[in-house]
Image (cartoon, rainbow over all chains, first blue to last red; front, side, top):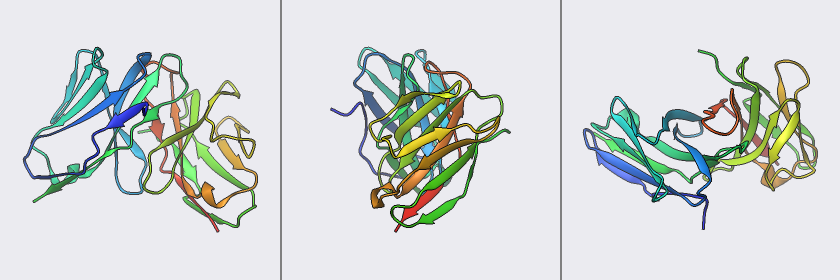
Amino acid sequence: RKEVEQDPGPFNVPEGATVAFNCTYSNSASQSFFWYRQDCRKEPKLLMSVYSSGNEDGRFTAQLNRASQYISLLIRDSKLSDSATYLCAVNRVNAGKSTFGDGTTLTVKP
Amino acid sequence: EPEVTQTPSHQVTQMGQEVILRCVPISNHLYFYWYRQILGQKVEFLVSFYNNEISEKSEIFDDQFSVERPDGSNFTLKIRSTKLEDSAMYFCASSDVRGGANEQFFGPGTRLTVL
């Protein structure tokens, strides 16, 4: 089983739609969680950290469910500029690395 | 806004040649990382570095790879004898804390093409 698994996608949605991505992790020692956005042939850019209490940044909401070992990202009122690949990343306690999922590609269409 | 920089943006080399990829992490960060991403695949961890030594490495990071912080600002990845399968984007990242909530910030990457 992969350490981090994401919805396979791709997701194709119209502008204004709400879309949600899920990511599961297998290692219960995982401590911190992140969503990155990656545009084609560019570097991952940190979108948001994911906290136990959930967190929101404008149209983006991230949730963490430790009991079920998954994190989610909700994008409301999607824009054309949201089209990208969304990566979840998981860090273990005292680990010097992030483990990434395969990514979920989102295309927002007019 | 401070950012991680990498040079060159694209490196083309012949199989068997040595390459050095360079990174300048964010200036007050103490933890440095190299990741690679083969075209169409996931971002894979290679190595992390702190206090002038490797703190963790993956199985990909074999004897052909080495890292160095030759001065106070640069962080390099050397591949001694490149193979075709080393062709990938190589991303450097840095963070100011380790483990825990270490938000890692990535450089723009070096695209390595091995012919």
